[in-house]
Length: 374
Image (tube, rainbow, N blue to C red; front, side):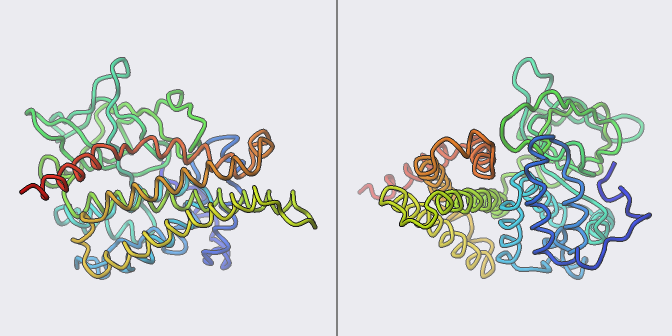
């Protein structure tokens, strides 16, 4: 069931929920409870929908190819949401990616119908790409029956699995070749294996194993290999780095709070002060990269592939430095009681593992060397 159908007819949201800052505070306050007792973050998304935050990539008017907000604004909102709760940010990241591709690729009249529903706060989207490893089931593939195209098989790491309405799913087609991008209605023919995802981090992202049992395919978007098409793939990748940045903000702020409480009325010693300075320097590096990328994206979205790999590598390294310095400075206590710093560490370490940057860096480095040959 869509999160947007839960109680919306019976209860209208109070006016103060339209204030994004108040909603972020509410999301942050509920993050520890969702981490301790994982479930889809329904309340955060109902409230985010009330602000229009979920519609940022939707064209206005819908028949155009524009956006109703800049990339700088989209990434500001995404970073803030991820800072409030990494799991909510992860799902929002996927929603923005999905909306972008539907706007670009869906055929009329499906495109207008879906975008209108998204703009009205009635649909939540995701992008599911991971295939099962041996023993987890057959990878998802397209089949045809009298009702049209359907999906059977398995995907894993399906973020938002228990609360999304639609998913863009990488699937095998009838002939061998690059994967297809299927736009799937999740209201039927979908079985969520909630026992599969047992990670310590991103617990409320509901990133489960999903078994498709004839889920209807609304459309196949674009050409084989479509998900990797530029500049959209780099745009997706930078959104991921923005989400990392939001979680790292929580780590920095939580670590500084712990250090301030420990210091009390005394002057902090050099060891923890140095760690704090290094954390702030790493966050400054993240800030600079994302500000630069937002300026480039708003001026010319096609320029993003030129900086995406370096940006993600720099942000990832800065995130890891923040986690290392925070742990060195605060000691074991915040991790023993599972406070905000512990949650940010668990979320960020898992999320960073899901994105291997080494192959892209190898390609870029090899090209740079080859370009300098006589």
